[in-house]
Amino acid sequence: MYITIGDGGNREGLASKWLAQTPVSAFRQATFGHGELVIVNATAAHWSWHTNPDAEQQTEDDVFFIKGRDV
Image (cartoon, rainbow, N blue to C red):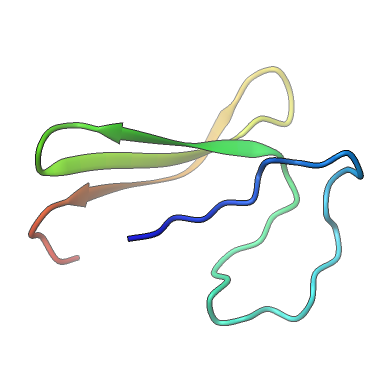
C-alpha cells in the first residue's frame, strides 16, 4: 500500500496548472497540507489528510486500513 501526497510546498507557491490527468493520479488540489498515519493496533491503521490554508487544519479525507479485510 502506498499513499503519495505532494503537499510539501515550494518557494514558487502553489501549483495551479497540471499536465493531463493520468490514471494513477486520483485527485489533485492546489493547497498545502499534510498526511497523518496512526497505527491503532496490530491489525488496524488510520490515515488522514489535512489541509491547512489558515492557522487551523481541516480534515479533507481519511481511511481506515484493517488487515485481512477487503473493502
